[in-house]
Length: 413
Image (cartoon, rainbow, N blue to C red; front, side, top):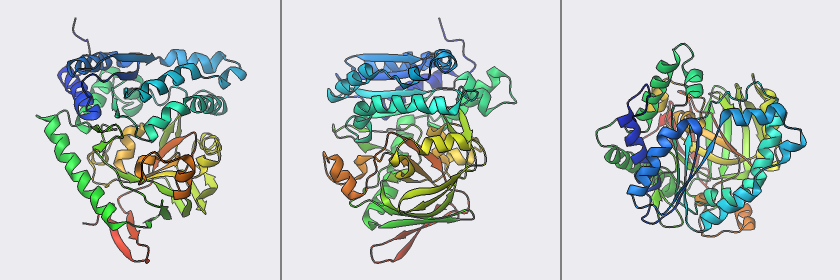
């Protein structure tokens, strides 16, 4: 029986194929660990089918449900929020050690927990992050091929398009997802190859320059981000440590690297809202000194933001800096998605928390070696947007030469 969905399911088929063949670039015989919300089953089923057609060994799906999640925050004891399924995450870590690929379908309503106590949400998130640490290391170290794609969940669609009827909102969000994911084009594989080539050109230029720092400026920001010793820029299709070239995010418009955790100075203000754990946080403004946030405020959702940066010491330091032109397709769509997978690809951004060790030279670096290079460690990794149409960025060399990188919100060359 065909899906009764208010959008073109042929494009959903193409998105599933793109997720498996471009996002994961699944190897014959490779297993897949697939997570999605129950509402995203139409896409999850298609992904499983495409994975098996590509030669997958075993596809193991785990589904979440918004109402089950809400029930926990409504009725669990405080002590119950400190529990997390470590047994499950230990198993996931073993799967990653056995070269299982990882795929997540993002469809969640960003405001599903908006009416819940931010402190309780943060408490459960911390427990989850601590338990998940053995498994997430394989992602942050790029040990395996992994990817994220999106499905137009109804709650998410109502948040993005509140003035439309539910079916119309879902159809509109589906259209935006398909366009950003390049599956509305005649040949998505070719479109992604061309896009990846352009991102690789930007990445290679930055790697050739070997900047020591980046200086961001706009009306609300004056921020110098030192870069980690032996940092590498990445973006678009990248080779995981298992030798498979994959696209970790679909969509993606960024090139990114690892900052130096102790060499960030200045003031920065968010240019777009951040939807985090059911709270929309607007007008984030922080001051960094010697790499650490020493002042923090927000126009809206400040309590949630303060809870976030108090997760651990690393939560007040940077783990990523990313360059995205203001003229990116997602920015030009004019849509605020309330979802970091999309919104981070509309503007330059920074991420608080754990760094990506894939962006450091050398294989199998120890935690001490990562720290010596300036890489940050934390239980969190949360991106928020700082770029706008006026943003200027200079690359600063080790000899203090300044090289234009961005002018007027876009690449300088």
